[in-house]
Length: 133
View 1 (cartoon, helix red, strand yellow):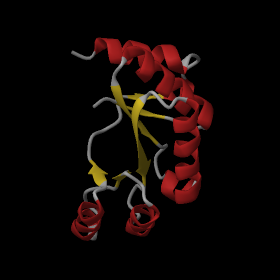
View 2 (cartoon, rainbow, N blue to C red):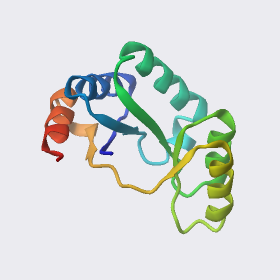
View 3 (tube, rainbow, N blue to C red):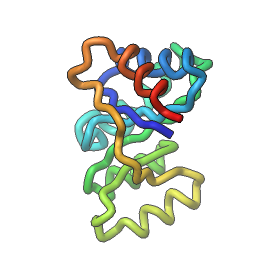
View 4 (spheres, rainbow, N blue to C red):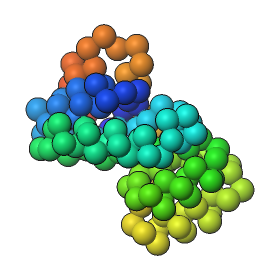
């Protein structure tokens, strides 16, 4: 499933709209280390708001926890469906086991597109989804 990095609610909604229009599945991933900066609660609130704004879009939300297993554990406990954690973190296997136990995914795929400097996120995501076989 293609993935894009979103930095705010507006980008998340625009990306979800593009996914809905293309009838494609898409992962919306937070900015790097957003588990620490935005926080788990902030990311989950963004995900809920984007889902409410575009309920027909088939999108998953992945919180990037960088190299912080504490943030990843908090995300799992709070109900995050996907978490990104650096694979060289000593606690990686423990975090994977926690994620597996509750049906969460420890995401390893790199994002395909970062919307940080994109003037038209919806169009950029649309182009990405149209280029996928």
